[in-house]
Length: 626
Image (cartoon, rainbow, N blue to C red; front, side, top):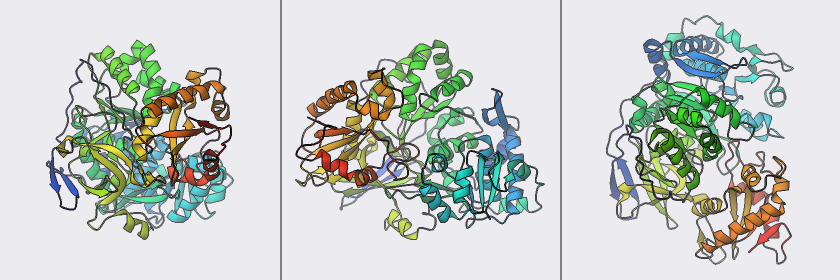
């Protein structure tokens, strides 16, 4: 799935009279080449600037130019911030790299990091980058949430790590015991599993190796920097090769497009997970390349985590802010009710950026209104299209064209190719930020690229103006999710899904559309428990089954489904039956990823009996019919 794709066909209501805050922004002009077979090539007119050979070259630069500037900080147990400056990060990276070089690690025996975002995670990652040894950050959910360790077991066999890192050895003890061979070295920050471990402090205390500088200088543009795992439609993790070229080129694309990053060193406060490309490549990279400071947000957009985020935002005013739509939605009541927080948050904010799902018009307009209250102008909201395989930055909107559903144009350094596919335009990409393939998966790699070497996203785009493609493109769904009804009518799932979620707000977080070879469409609905509690505050917190079977919620959903039906134009957009799922989607069965993205194909496969019940002549009481 696309990592930075804004997946919605909702449009933002008419803008207010208030102006956008002016920011520096790059040129996204393009040339268009249409072929007789309907294929369209879109190439940026601006050239990509020169990029570093190694991402750690940036660490050297800032350790020299701003040695005492904070590079990363995280909450300490005492309540303050544990800060690491650029000079300290470089020093730590050199010592850890020396220790790693002595262990004979390589792409064949890489480092696997099982823990989430933390300073210690960053120390080991930069040590690996400095030594030229690939590492793979893995979702903690594979170790701490999974019931059968299926994904973790699979990827351990795929990667064959020579060293595994966890911050808390006690919390990860079972995952280590069942998935990491006794002969594989385990490095920990603290805690004590039932096995021999190496302390991270011991790596930090390693003297600098005589061959350290030579090893660092030997790192080239095609050296593998890391493996990032992506599930795709199969449910099994694929290890996307990320080279130094990809990381470095993509950061220049970012800097030259989001040109305000050059106006002052960025300050960001961020929770987005480093095992995903948005948090781990996009955000760490733009902080490092531009000499900025990243404060690790120990909160999340959940009822139990949002308070930590608010605490951090009371102290740190970001210059650019990244989040998912749910995160912005969770911030709204706090920004609305607390003038001091609102003033601090918007005080020096050049832009906000969202990805992963559609940002509703209500949330967008509310952020605009709050920004105007604090600054007299609307802070630009940006988004685009990208994937783990593209590092991720590929397409971007401009401040003036940005709206939900719009993904803009390819940025300098990227060529886009649009190929007709069942009435849609399938998008493909080529550039120095594109992966060479999937580790130890030659067949999957071959399938991912076309005969001209373009990476096949699997996403479809729709021109804003068919007569002027330079006006940019809207997201038009996943090609693999579309299907035919029994009548032969194609169903465009992406736009339909987004309209359904928007109409059923705030009750619905996502929906799986069923109806392959059927006469009509139906929906398997994933409820948003926070939204359900807004509709019925008496619901027990976190109880999905209670929400799905609650008469107030079911009636509220029925009203929204009727409203949705009123806007339908035919069999391919009309959903007549729905089920509110009362059991969580399974990460082990591949129904949902650790970041909450729903795998439509896996849900349809594993809930086939439920779908048969929906279409039965006399469906059960669980089914809501219109």
